[in-house]
Length: 83
Length: 196
Image (cartoon, rainbow over all chains, first blue to last red; front, side, top):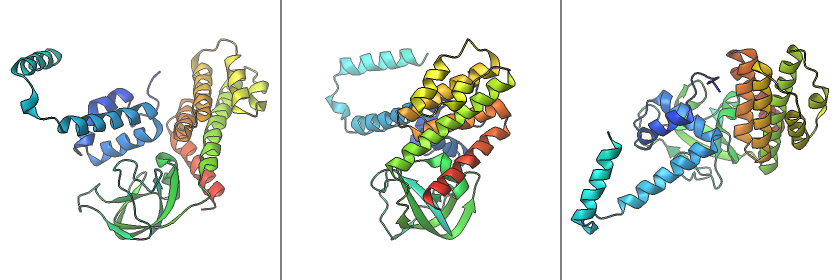
């Protein structure tokens, strides 16, 4: 289905912008469109809630609890997803 | 300026999580554009639907934007009691039946009789009729899909989603001006339903 309302964000664009939204780095116009999308899209609203929870949970993790092997493996996987 | 503000349950800001105190002035956390106290004119209400509707008094410079206003200070003046769970459910039905009405128009324009659809009273009945339509194509197919989806969302209690679907359907049928026109119909519905 084509996008009928040009200024509205699609769910794919919401995913792309979520980090900027959570870091309060969106322009006023983009933030307004982002928030309006959250009002009517339960899926994106749930996604943003999950992202907030993930940030909250991961910020409590301590780096020193991670073994060198696990850290190397995570870095390898992360680099793989960023190709 | 007196305006309106939708909040989630417990006077909670839907995006910030901030719990608004009742009848106390709240200052914006900074003077940066966009960081102020946001509120709605009546015409803005359909864009920001939530569980609680409050009247809010705004002070300081008030900037008016396309779908909201922003001020330096705000104070919840009182809850709009007529905006409750029943009003929210009725608003969802309103959106779905508007999408249905637009589908009826599109089908009529295409020479397809849709008396049963126009006569359907409940959302369940509307959805059954929509699902029993003959194979459609082009705009009538798109409009029927919007109406069906709006019914599903309204039955799911998703008022903001059902009414948004009606506004998108209006664009499909009427062109770019349809969105604002449908949102205007929705804001009048809220104002009348809540006596604003």
